[in-house]
Image 1 (cartoon, helix red, strand yellow):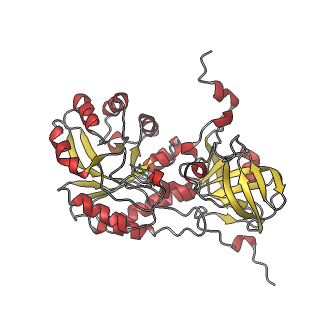
Image 2 (cartoon, rainbow, N blue to C red):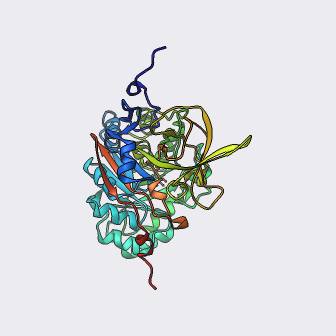
Image 3 (spheres, rainbow, N blue to C red):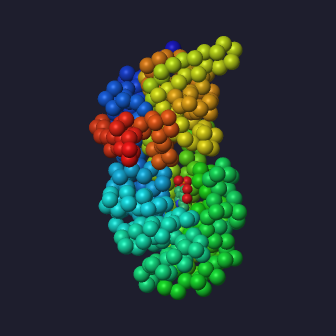
Length: 417
Ligand code: PLP
């Protein structure tokens, strides 16, 4: 029997594109051995292959550029709102979608040109709108009649806006992340567009926006979206949102980016600038989470729980959406013992992965959960007063902390007692 050298084994496509198993059989991300990262920076931690995010931004731009001159790629920063990421995508020359005053603050501090920023939100406060207007944010995506009223009062003459609409399209995805159906808290119904136009006196409408949902694998919904929006009138710009799904497990086969872009452009009129707002598909597979196994609890005939030093605090998605992940022991890939990976928080529902096959997990092993690059750090919280993990960027074998680990002192930093 010939034994394949570890480095030659290919990893599942859920891992960052440059991830590999090194000669010691350890996972490497961005050229950095994950076991060494765990030793140096501790666990839990979010580990990213920096080049993977850059490569995906370039793939988006190239996919559009080879098909049309009229496009704009916008990073939906809610997926991973960290200063280093805003800087990275600003350097890549793409635009930025902010979903709140806080995200806007991060984007501006990181150096995003205000005119390249799109401000979203179904209930932007007057303070957020004022902040955006004062800082010269390029485009505000208006979401309601009340917001038009607020902006008419405070925005400068000819402030650029887009109108968010619900096109009545329901893709196959978790209901919490379907956003394009008529029964939605977001945006205007298509029928309300003429009245919204009448209400705008000083604002400059430059197009329609729709985001139909997230983690979508179907492409016909995007063809339909462009058809519906272009049927509503003639606009210089159509923003078709984000939402392209990614692989969380090796069984997931998301559409190729090229096919997705084809679908977006298929029914968009040639002279219209098509805007696309990806979040998850730019950063999701670039990141992995690393944990240390702390306990192994075997309940004979029932289940084996392995508990790690993180969980719902650093990855809320399994609890929020029943999201599925896979995992490996960072130094022993593959394996046949089916276990359940539990978090360390005081909730029975704090389960990261139900039934995953690992190579005989033991206390002290480093567990790696791939595809946690989107909405992991973004949704991290302090339940049980657990400090949030650091974010580590890896590139060509060098690792740098771009968000440090929270400390116990950080937990009391806002107290006024
Ligand atoms: N645009 C808007 C308005 C969104 O609400 C979202 C996600 O919720 C996105 C873009 C990004 O979606 P995704 O991360 O699935 O690409």
